Length: 94
Image 1: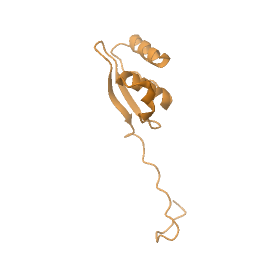
Image 2: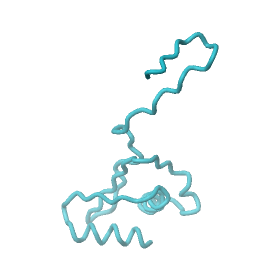
Image 3: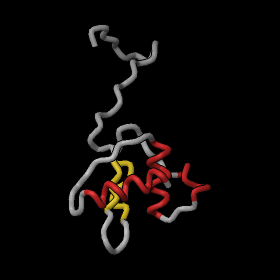
Image 4: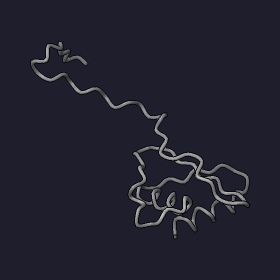
């Protein structure tokens, strides 16, 4: 509840503004579970990847989770080297 209270305080201080709040994945999961109405016993079912973006819109009607775990801005992970003996050439220069 401390994280939710802090987010709502920030939203009150910046009405009609877009603000970024950064935290660790478990805190993000808990905050999203709160705004989604998900029971906290199941918050670990939500996937939050490193550097992902989730968007919660707080307004006078009701909070809305607009986006969750977006990683489209992240580069794909590097390809692993080919396994020995698979016929692929290996370039030590990269």
